[in-house]
Image 1 (cartoon, rainbow, N blue to C red):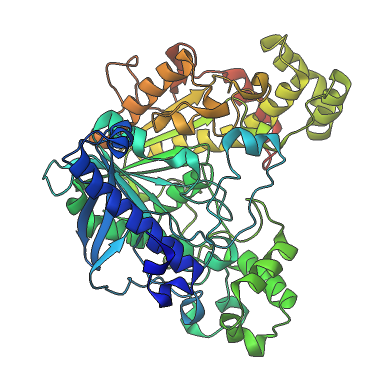
Image 2: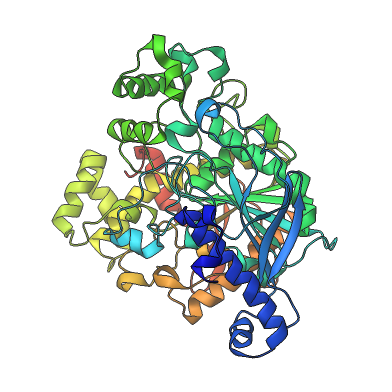
Amino acid sequence: MKLAEIPAKVRRDPKLANAFTRRSFLKQSSVLIGAAGFGALGRASTALGQTAAQSLFVVAGTASGKVQGMNLGGINVFKGIPYGASTGGPNRFMPPKKPAAWTGTRDAFEFGQISPQVLADSRAQYTQLIDWDLQSANMGEDCLTLNIWTPGLRDEAKRPVMVSLHGGGFAIGSSAEPGYNGDTLARFADVVVVTVNHRLASFGYLNLVDVGAPSEFAYAGIAGMMDIVLSLEWIRDNIENFGGDPTTVMVWGQSGGGAKTSTLMAMPSAKGLFRRAGVQSGSALRLVTREAGAASAEKLLKQLSLDKSRITDIQKLSWEQILDAQTAVAGGGAGGPFSPVVDGTVLPRHPFDPDAPAVSADVPMIISTVLDEAALVLSNFDLDEAGLKKYVQGIAGDKADRVLKLYRSWYPTTSPYLIQARIATDRSFRSNAVKQAERKSALGKAPAYMYLFAWPAPGYDGKFGAVHGTDVGLVFHSYRGAIGGGGAVAQALADRMAATWVSFAKSGDPNNPSIPHWPAYDSETRATMVFDRTTTVEDDPRREFRLLWDELGTGGFPG
């Protein structure tokens, strides 16, 4: 399309002009493909798995209006569908609202806005390993959107619906990160894959009511999790139009996504919206108390120069001002003080402390860790034995020699860097996962299944080991990029792990022909699936390390 053919109002707005020309090109391409068969555009279409007679464009209905996505090689892809209204202005720090209805058909070709955050530093090798810097640059408060990959529409196939919550703690990340692409999993197993954006950090978890804000701000400290519940309600009400079964929904996530899943398990408002849950490297036992949340809110208000008499003015500020202040108070990483607040109502208790929540007693779980989780924040690759000993002395005192002797007896040739990572992991991620599985099992109702992932990521010559996130792509049946390596071992692991995830999503039982029989976890046998070059079931693997840190005491991440 020529510039002169674009309406003047659109032409004056570069963003509209780009969208207009892109949309026109796609639609004209679709017509040309149908008319020209296997010409130049036909050959491009064939590369995407299209036939000449099949339109690239597909339309599905939602409660708010119709959306148009694209059929890419047999998978219907819809991105950026709003499940909630904008969270800016008067909606900031409020419970989420349903989106306004629209007329006509809304394009769903691109990911929606991501919640305001500090994007990852692309210089870090771990960031490069997991492509964490490749988030959408489209940032703002109109971020309540979701994305769908599905093999069929309105066909009553009743496919399992697999909902992935992104990582990044409660502060960063988005569903646009390449590792959450649902295409390969939907294609592998005829399932519907959904990924979700929601509010993060202070935008989703700022306890204003306990520092003097009016009562309408009562849910500001838990609003980000309320977003996720609203997305699950949207799935319940709309997913049949996308070929999914609203009664067969699995929610899972890794790292921060696992913590969000853990939190959903304790939320009465989420009951019945999902039937299975998966927590990868993100076992959240406790969250933020009201007192701690209020202390963090006070710091943010001070940074914004807002006293208690002007708290409501926080809705009038730009999101950029709030993000600036948040970063000054808490830094820009995935940690920090702005996490879900146990408000006593929406979140009436800590997720898995002192026990597993009864409200989700009927929801089976998969709970997991990887061997070298803590390597994600460790960059001292040249650590020597003297440095390792100094590190261990700092956390174990006069028991340092005992700790080092045990780890070196098991791992005589492992680098000091990875020994350090395993110690930090055993004291934090692994300890929390074991407690979560023990407490879930103790309810005596729906089972918990535990796995340990031990295959080292091949990127950067394998120096990160089986680092935090190595297993993420594999459950999506993806093994490309530096973290997967694209080799035969990664492909075999992807086959096994995706098949296991799909089996669990369908039935609540992960067992399938590609793996050995996997018993449920309990505190006596502690049966654990170990995913490595070979896949085996072991009872209480690495028992000596579990007992060591039970005795010496665990510590907060990273150890």
